Amino acid sequence: MKRFDEALYATFRRHITTSNFFEKMCSGCWLRPCWAGIPVSPEWSGTSVGGSRSTGGFAPLYTFPRGRVLAFLRTARGPVAKQRGLPERRIGGNPNAEVLLIPRAVPRQALEALGYRAERACLRRGDGDDGGMDLSVTRDYYEHGSVVDHYAHAAAEIGLWRSEEAVFREVFARGDCLLELGTGTGRIALGLCELGYTRVIGVDISRAMIKRAQRLRKILEYEAAFQVMDACDLKFDDGTFDGAIFGFNGLMQIPGRENRRQALREIQRVLRPGAVFVFTTHDQHAPAYKRVWKEEAKRWAAGKQDRSLLEFGDRYEDTEFGRLFVHVPTGNEVREDLKATGWKCDFDTLRSQIAKEPGDVTEFSDDCRFWIARKPEEAEAAS
Image (tube, rainbow, N blue to C red; front, side, top):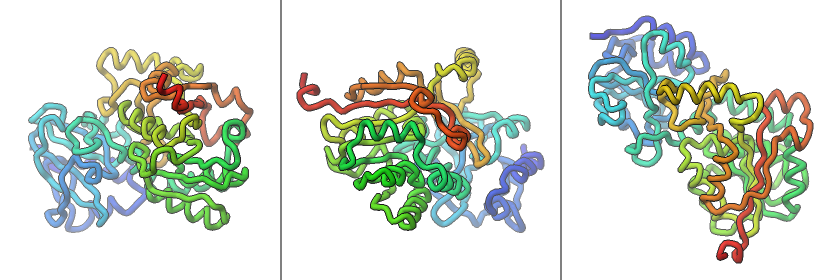
C-alpha cells in the first residue's frame, strides 16, 4: 500500500511557487497521508471528474498500479478535491491504475523521475466520454496572472508586428467589420484601432485576458469591443463580419483536429461571402524544426510518444508559466482542413518572407506561417 510520498511532496513544493494554492492544499490539519501520495482533506468537496469545468487548472494524469483515484479539482469557489472511482476508459483501460491529476506547474520529467507515468489527459470536450482534451487545456494556461501580464506587456509595448500590419493593410479595408479570435489582451485588435480600423471585435476563451483587454481599451480610448467566447461556438449571426483574424498561432492551440475544423466552420459561418480570414501557424517543415519532428515521428512510430498528446504534431511547451499546448501542423494538413471546411486558400508564406521583424518581436515569438483564406462567393460555393 502506497502512503504519503515525501519525494512527490518535495517536488510539488519546488515547482508550485506562483500562488498560495499549494500551501492551502498541504498545510496544517489539511496534511493527510492518502493512497495517491498527495494530502487530502475530508472537508473538501467537489464536482465529478471529466466535465470541461471540473478539471480546470490541472493536467496531465499520472498513474501507478493501485485501484483508487485522487483528483484535485478547482471550481469558482477555489481548490477542492474528491476521491472517487472513474470509468476504465478514463484511465487508459487499466482498472488497477491509481490516477493523479497534477498541476501543470510541475514538469512531467520531475514526476517521471519519481516513477510516475504519464497517461492521456482527462481533459475533454462535452460530456468527457470521447477520450479527448477540451479547451480548458488552453484556457487555464491563459487565466494565469503572470501569463496575462506577459501578454498585456506585448499589447502595450510591442503592438502589431510589421508582417501583420503589411498583411492587414493589404487584405482589409478601413471600414470593414473585423473579428479577431484568440485576442488575448488585445494586441492585434488594439493595433488595428491604431491603424484606423474602427469596427473591431476581439473574442477569447480566457476571461482574465478579456478583462485586461477591456482595461487597455479604456485607457487608450479605442472603440474595439471584447467578449469571452469559444471559437468553436461563436455567438454571432451568419455573415456578420467582413474579415477575421486568428493570430499568434491561436487556432493551433485548440486541441483536436476536429475541434480546429469546427472553429474553421464557425469562422466561415460568421463571415460574409468573399470575406478574408488571416491566421498563423507553426510549420513542421520549417528548416529550424525539421530534425525535431523527424525524431518525434520515430517516437510515435515506436509508441513512445507523450501519452497525454492526441495527435502527431501536438506538443506541450514548458514555459516559465507552466505547460502550453500547441499543435504544429504541416502545410498539407492546413490545406486539407481548409478544403474540408469549405475555404479557398489564397496564399501562405513564412513571416520572415513578409517583413524583417525587430528584436522585441523575434524575442516574443518564433517565425510562423501566415495563411490567407477566403470564404467563397455564393456562386463559387454553388459550383
